[in-house]
Image (cartoon, rainbow, N blue to C red; front, side, top):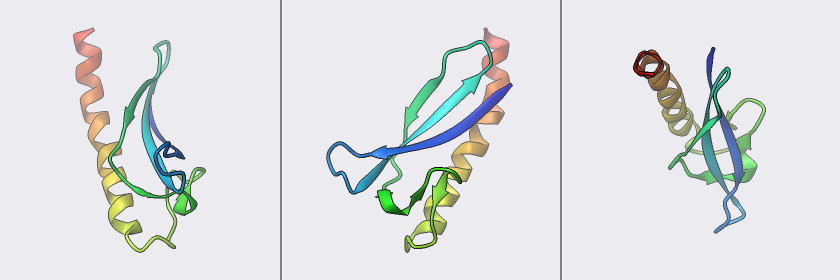
Length: 84
């Protein structure tokens, strides 16, 4: 089983902004983390829904880019499994 989740943390350089991480999880393997270049306010990030809230003026663009990333990697995951 292969899953991708997004986790938001306060940015160490600016506590009001969110630092997003994409977490790859596969059963019996350690989690792999990739830091993303999507920037937004911490108060506009919804951790449960793993997307930006509608209060953010650019929430559609940001959420679309997150969805594209999430859809890109499941296509690559079978290749990873074949090369192991």
